[in-house]
Structure formats: structure tokens, C-alpha cells
Amino acid sequence: MSKSTRITQVATIGIRVTDQQKAIDFYVCELGFELRRDVPFGDGRWIEVAPPGAMTTVALVPEGVPTGIRLTTRDADADHAYLRARGVDADAEVVRMGPAVPPMFAVRDPDGNSLILIESS
Image (cartoon, rainbow, N blue to C red; front, side, top):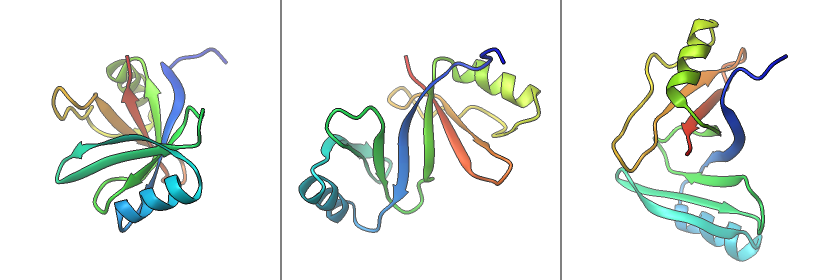
């Protein structure tokens, strides 16, 4: 089967945490992960940790932010159009939250699991 999307990698696995600081303490101090990203996000923070040298990160997601697998794509608009045309259960539109947040959209697999495609340059 030929490659038909621009998906390049599994970037982040988002897991729900009730206390982001306690989660950082556990993953960084107890498991030895690196703190890769800790930036303002909406009313809270976007935090990613990973084992040293790993490409895929774990996002420590607060309540209200979707969990799941985040994939990178070189072209969110093209993949969105392609997948919708093939009948994939995908969001109606590509989400654009402003210049600091890349374009993204979600698709659902046959079991309802969400995969979030995020454009990465």
C-alpha cells in the first residue's frame, strides 16, 4: 500500500493527571524522565516529559484537554481533506488556535479512540 498521508511519527501520548506538579515530580524525579516542555496553555500548562533520548513524549494533560495519541503530519489540511474524502471519522475542520499553536484535527478509529494529527514543519 502506498503512503497517502503525510504522518511522520508518534509524537506524544497524552495522559490525564490531577496534579501536574506531582506528575512532574514522579516522572522526572522518580522515573528519571527529562522535562521537555512546560509552557502556558489556555488557563494552565502544557507539559511533556520523556525518557532521555526518546523521540516520543508523554504529555501530562490537565482536566478538560483531550488525551490520546498525537501524531505529527507535514500538512494538516491535506491529510484532513484526504481522510475525510475516504470516509474516516475526522473532525469537521482543522483547528487553528493562533500563531503559537500548530494546525490540528482529530480522527477516531473504529473503536472510537482519538488520534490527534498536529502539523509539524
